[in-house]
Length: 361
Image (cartoon, rainbow, N blue to C red; front, side, top):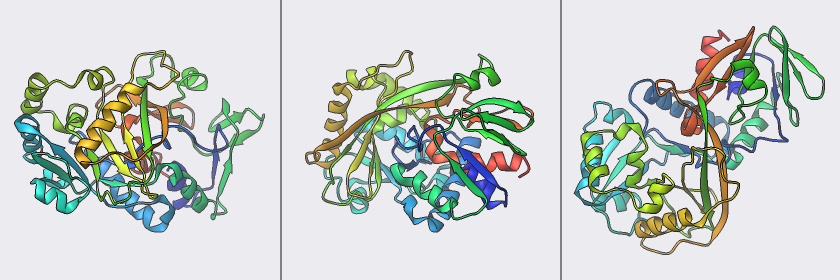
């Protein structure tokens, strides 16, 4: 997205990618443009601006798979309902497109939700893209510009002067500005430039994807456990939910919530877990998948299709909750931008736009 911003503003861009193509958190996520749970203030404003940019770019690059599908969070019982009601009462509820729906209204919007629930929180501003192909489509569009060069299979190893870097092929690249978007890679050059006290941590998650559902899931879907993990839902009602109905043991152990998005091929992307303590496990475990399957089937009122894929991913999260992302000048003409956390897919266009504006592109 930084490359996109720079090319759109008339600059020449060389994008250096460590692998043959990006394979990290930007592909291993839900593809959600997730406005609903963002903290009020700068984080929400960034998400809403990013939502506008995603729609604008999606109109130019159909391969992103942008769709303004919104989301539904079905709730059960008075405690979960009270959290949804508190969300709808927020002063920024209209900006998020919050509305509390009856079960009948929710099923009219998303007929695939045949399970039992008390009500559903609708967020009209949520949207989705295709995470496995979005970067490929964006790069294909960028390559139409003579001002864009993509250099895969190279790693930047050293800053060798003002806005100049050397890659592991020994080639030196000179520029007016260098932006290091390092994802979850926080060692090596990042540690050398930013020091050992970089306020960013790594987070691991597990997800899965099914065969085609055989019907349309017209919105993204979350469960009430998502209330526990997104700052927009903080309220006395949430305190009462946490005290009166703790998460099931598996969900609590793996710090879980349900998020679910239908892919362009009809399959469902389902997750997720959160692991913060290092060293991370190298394998995936089945109990979280069993829990997610149970929750999803209770909402759909039907068995899930066959699980086609399971995977783990790692993303970088800024530990300073007042920041949307960690943006730091680490050398003359060199900036580090990392740590958007679970907001990365949602906020990336606006994060890049802010970088471009601050650097005076």
